[in-house]
Length: 245
Image (cartoon, rainbow, N blue to C red; front, side, top):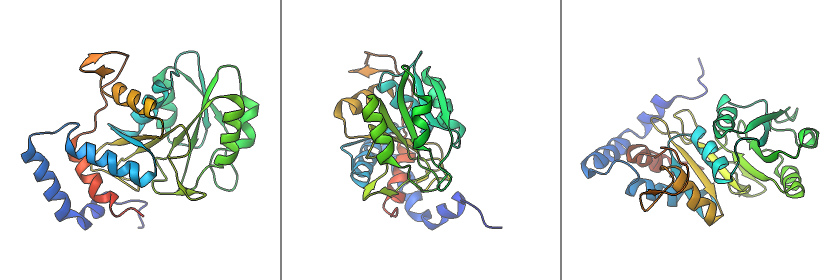
């Protein structure tokens, strides 16, 4: 039997490094949003080619927090593709917005840009372009549509870590990129983890606040959630990131 992914065997190939990293974190007495998370955020941003990367608890949270950071919620509509993981739609619904689905490009099974105009309404606030099987969405067409209609482009890169579109890493092209680091992904943790990328410093600041109760100086300035990336997963992801092409 040929498996699509095999996290257990992947662990074995990094076993000594991972065990050392985990034991180092356990001895550090710093388990949430510490040095390992900060270093992963720096390294992942450099790898993707963005000014910021923000660690969150999982990929679903990454999309929900991205939507919230763009002030998208109740009464708004978000266009995405019907052929995606349920998490994409679940995140839209968790933000309070309505998911509006379009069909796939018949060649690459990603979002069909030709259908965007058909579902556009005055309530449309964003498009979530889901890159699938390592294939990039036709981002030139989607970007053109988003700019013409003054709406946001969110990239769901959960199944295309490391892939490029015209020389740029996916997750660096839209307003925000969202990544799942579930164990079966190209860059997988040993547990749940996620990342948000952006070149907009204001959005990055807002994402960091939302992931931890909307805090600024430990005061809740805006509605937030509890979506903190832990040090153990960050330390494991740092090891695997070095091997990601």
